[in-house]
Image (tube, rainbow, N blue to C red; front, side, top):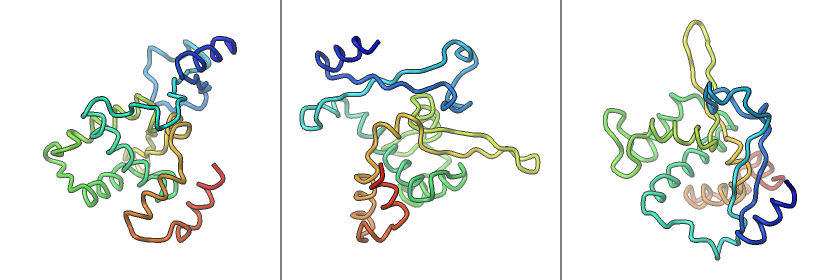
Length: 176
């Protein structure tokens, strides 16, 4: 496997990242895949950013722009957020109206499902007083692909606040 990984990286600029099954949440897997393997693999583009053609499809801007906002919200709120709080913050930030699709991002609920399936987000369900509550956190792919310091820089510029003002997030980002 290591030889194949080396060749993929050298020839195609692809890095293979292993995600153990025990780190995959119950909502990001489907019933048919349970018990089928102990690990999952994610393919990442290992080329330098300047050499990448990240946005080849205009729909990717919409898709991953929303993901960036969601990851920033989760990161800035301590790493986990209830679904209702996430949707409220999205409504505040991007003017999302729950009754209709967003003009740029489309159906946000479907996008959340997509990000969970793609392992950018983890979604867990908790039952509190007979009420099912969904919570979101960063998925394994986000942990591998997203630079927290760059994300914090984005938030700092957006909020016009020095990056080191966010002490716990700054510490976490610099330890990445």
